Amino acid sequence: MKNIKVSFSRNLTSSLKKTILVSKGCLILSFVAMHSLSAQQNKRLFQGDYDAKTVKFGYFLGLPYTNFNIRFNNYFVNRDKVYAITSPGTIGLKMGGLANVRLNDYFDFRVLPTVAIYGRKLEYRFAETDPSDPDNVVGLGEKKELRETAWFELPVMLKYKSERRGNVRMYIFGGLRYAVETNAVNRRNRQQFTTRTNDFSIEYGTGIEFFREYFKFSPEIHFSHGLINLINPATAAGTAIGGIDKLTTHTVTLYISFE
Image 1: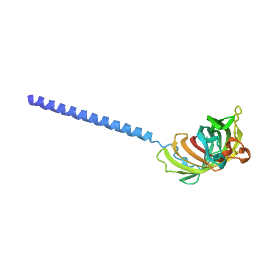
Image 2: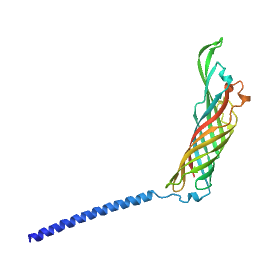
Image 3: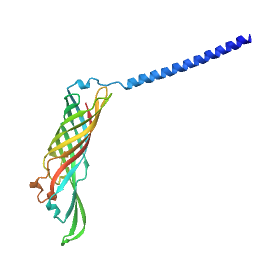
Image 4: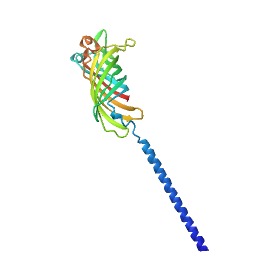
């Protein structure tokens, strides 16, 4: 009788152990299955047919950081009053639309009509002299001039994109940008120097595309270098910028675009 009880007890213990192990195994498998299902959902491919569309449209906002590149002439070198002219960086605003034309699996052609507002500065440092004795320097002075302008810009770009990895893709681009000044934003008569009203620049940069269910979100960074000398000799002669031989634009812009 005792042997039967001992055998029953052992069998019951063994069954309980097996039941516990099976339960643990089922729990682990359930957890793995749930995790796998969740991972598959997270890897859902948004807009899988996006590249099948030849032409796509969108819009963007941009935050430019801009200034002038300056090259001086002999007139400035020979001056004894103004000893430095610099252009501190300022922040502006850009907005516009975009049209993207697919050329093949790796290249796109882009056009980005843009409205931009800039407030570029020139800063002068000069020697202050005694009016009764011009050769006597009594101190150092500083003066800032601001030119606020609105521009219409038309960049054209060739875009090279990598292969898509899930919902992410990297790309680089380069091209040219033509800009024309539409009007000077004259606030309280602060426009203190004039420049040419058109500009032509080389522009390049990089970005990353994030595909979502209903749109594509793309942060980009653009570098722009002006090729046209904005100094107009007819209006610069006899002014504070008369010592500047060449004045070109330089801009770094953070874009956020949606397509």
